[in-house]
Figure 1 (cartoon, rainbow, N blue to C red):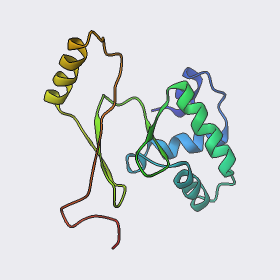
Figure 2 (cartoon, helix red, strand yellow):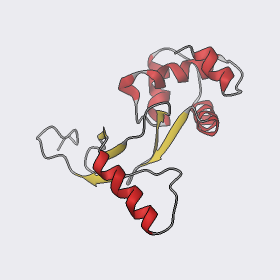
Figure 3 (tube, one colour):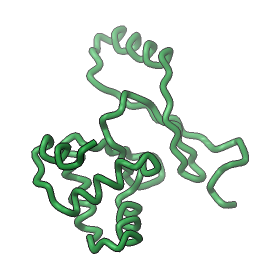
Length: 141
């Protein structure tokens, strides 16, 4: 994806901080990333972009629809690029790992519940919370 086009399409001026932050967010390894983690990556890359700028740019991206902000339990906001298809999230309460999933049965059931209550869904999000059970929890106990 061309970052310049993405920013211009969102009505944002192309600046170095915006380009660098968007580049970080487009890395598949950096989905569900916090502002602080974006800032740490910028420091590792030798960029002199302050934490306040990171927060400001992430908020601008959220307002422009470039990002989705999630408020998972027990923690800070995390961000992901918003051009993905709809999906839901499993979140480990111990290590904070986030797993994206899609389930047609859950989607159909949500539509049925909404229809039963005379609500036309415009959007929704589902977060399921638990704890890793596969021995690969990153909690570091």
